[in-house]
Length: 154
Image 1 (cartoon, rainbow, N blue to C red):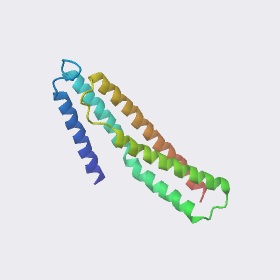
Image 2: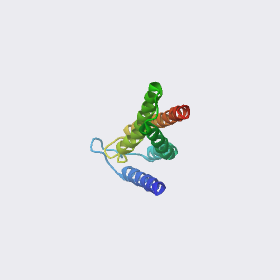
Image 3: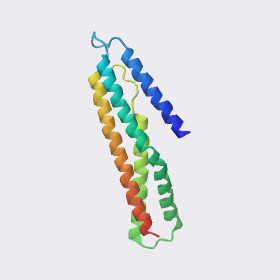
Image 4: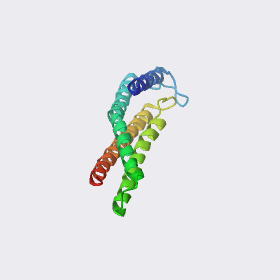
């Protein structure tokens, strides 16, 4: 179900980019919005961004499982070591923040480039590529730390 959602999402991105490439004139300039080479370069960059997103997305389900395990540990109430309890809370918040970072990135990712020049689109996609990379790093780091804390709390 989730896989088909992302395929549909990707197809919508490709279609919207195609429409912005077809557009003939910008409001600010009397020239084509995107020439063929720019269109191809932007489509490739957009594909890179989505491939990066798609490579990170499967780890979200694993993150949710780890977060649930941490939550159970916290709710059990049988941890007397205050330092360990603090670590569990910290990793729970880190996991929660990483999950929210992915959801925020997905909500804010623009697929409509109407009114944007090719260089603006390219710059936007490069920023998005960097942001989704950072989200992936945050997810990976939070899961790694949570696994260590969970293992030490057993």
